[in-house]
Image 1 (cartoon, one colour):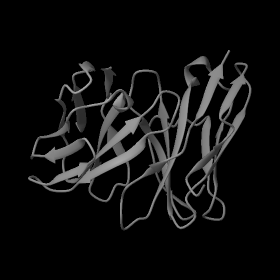
Image 2: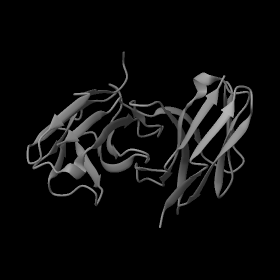
Image 3: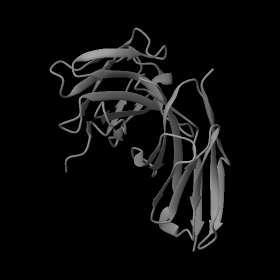
Image 4: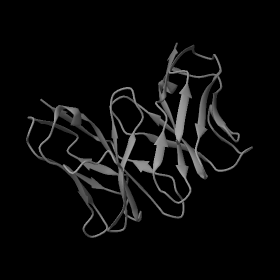
Length: 113
Length: 110
């Protein structure tokens, strides 16, 4: 399977703990995006990378959130001091700059208790 | 403010009963409009991209159309396996980010 992969698929954590998610994009894609989706809503943009450069961050991304893409391949999204409001599906997508279609991974479901 | 609104929120059809989903948008500098299908607990699956008013794309029982203010996803003779949430999203010129609507949840009964 050469699609976007995410790990873990599910994460349950206690409030105040830190969590980290990983995304592996489609290999030839140079853009990588993170979105957050809550029940009954469409995905909301968080941030995106072109190669290793983080080009835009949403105001939704508080200072407890940080994302990296160190070698322009996989990316990690870390949430520090989790809150119950962080419970959501975290989606990763990738695209070729010149084409535009974003292909999504299966998501990581985060539950903060 | 950039906004995408989908209607209806939910739609129940009998197998074979054709219908349309609507996506209306207000965005400055539209680069493209995208349709995705999402099954419960899974990531969105790409269906179509539309770039200019008058453009149409088809795939099996689905056809997407675009005007200057809205897009329609027409479903012809749907089957139960078409049951899913259909998401519409727009991309502003050169921003990279997608702005999604809240989705239309379609249920097709046999």
